Every structure is written in structure tokens, then in C-alpha cells.
Amino acid sequence: MEQQIKSKQRVADHGEVFTAEREVNAMLDMVKQETERIDSRFLEPACGEGAFLAEVLRRKLAVVKQKYGRNPSDYELYALIAVTSIYGVDIMEDNTENCRKRLFKIWNKEYTAVMKKEANDRCREVVKFIFKKNILCGDALKMEQQDGTPILFAEWSQVSGSLIKRRDFELNELLKGHERQMDMDMLLGGWEYDEEIDAYIPAPIKEYPPTDYRRLDDYE
Ligand SMILES: C[S@@+](CC[C@H](N)C(=O)[O-])C[C@H]1O[C@@H](n2cnc3c(N)ncnc32)[C@H](O)[C@@H]1O
Image 1: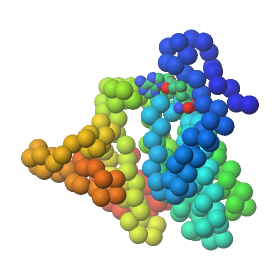
Image 2 (image 1 turned 180 degrees about the horizontal axis):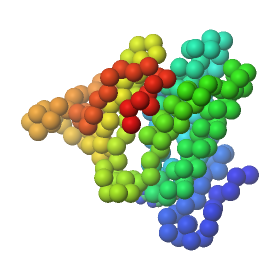
Image 3 (image 1 turned 90 degrees about the vertical axis):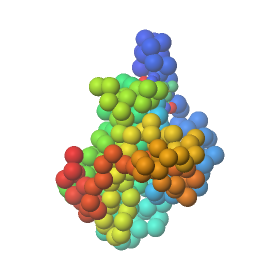
């Protein structure tokens, strides 16, 4: 059984008690369909070592295997798209680092088992890069990173084939989109209505050109 507590001090300081696998699975089963959609986005806002994200990744990769396991190039692309949809924030640096490592290990092990060989270095580097961008150390209540700057998340979306587009957003702005109605400030600021999530989304802080998934780490 995995360890749920690292120290009494951490429990007192940060409420750090990790969720056991059984509870994780029971909770994820309540949104089962979403956990099995390769590109559905999940954010664990106090992710610890990624108890929920790890299971979401496993479930998504099982679907990638079932759909694309017999086609190596599709398998690689969609196994990477599964990674792009997983986000986390934790206030403790060691937790975010362990979370990234844990997720990468799951991805690498599953890829190796399905493809019967390890992914090439380029692909593994890009997967690590995406986890670095998506799993951040910061305060999820203040929505700030350790240095006091706003938490920025990259949205990765498949444009066509192997091309992925990245847009960076401020988390606090993104979350406002569910509460707000369009006003003049939003209109002038470039906010748009997104039908899929039934909310307004702000203009991105930065947009990148569509890029082959193997080169996503060209842009820091
Ligand atoms: C109860 S644990 C849950 C961890 C994980 N979600 C799980 O289920 O295993 C709470 C986590 O929140 C983190 N935390 C506490 N305050 C936070 C804050 N303001 N912003 C981000 N993370 C925070 C702690 O470091 C700890 O890892």
C-alpha cells in the first residue's frame, strides 16, 4: 500500500495526506467517460504527487493502446496528446518534482510495453517538457507561482495530424470565464465564447505556431 503521509509536520503545515488508490478510482469512476477521452483536460489543483493524475493518465493510455496500439506512429502521437491534457499545481516543490517523475514513469513504462521498445530520446524529451509545463509549483489559492507571478498554463491542441498548437493562459483569468457574462472590457480584451466548455475564454498571453509534436520543446 502506498504511503499517505510523509510527516506530521507536513500534515499540519499543508494538509498533506495523499489519497489512496481505491478512493481515487471510486472518484474517477464518477466521471468515467471523461477519464477515458484521450484529450479531456484534467487539473488537480493541489496535486501532491499526482494520485489522481496518475490514474487519469493510465486510463487514457489504455484507450490509446486499444485504438492505436497496432500503429506505432499513431500510438506515439496519441500517447503524447494524452500527456498534454494533464495538469497539476502543488505548493511543495518536492511534490511537483515527484509528480512529474511519477507520470513520466507511467508513460514510459506503458509505451515500452505496448510498442515492445522504449520511445526514442526526442519523444521522451518532449514528454518530460510537457510535464514540466503542465505540473507547476505554486499556490493554487492565490493562483501564483513561487516567485509571485501568475500561474500560466499551456493549452495544447491538435491542429491536424502531428501538428500541435500551444497557447498560454493565466489560470486566474481562465477560471473567471465560467462566472462572467460578456462585457465591453472582455470584448476589447479579446475574450471569446467556447461552446464546448460553455464558458468565455480570455485571450491567450502568448500563441505559438503549429509545431510537430516532436519539436514542441523548441519553444520554452
Ligand atoms: C490532501 S493533500 C492531496 C494531494 C493529492 N491531491 C492526493 O489526493 O493525493 C493536499 C496537497 O495540497 C498541497 N497544498 C496545500 N496548500 C496548497 C496551496 N495553497 N496551493 C497548492 N497546493 C497546496 C499540499 O502540499 C498537499 O500536497
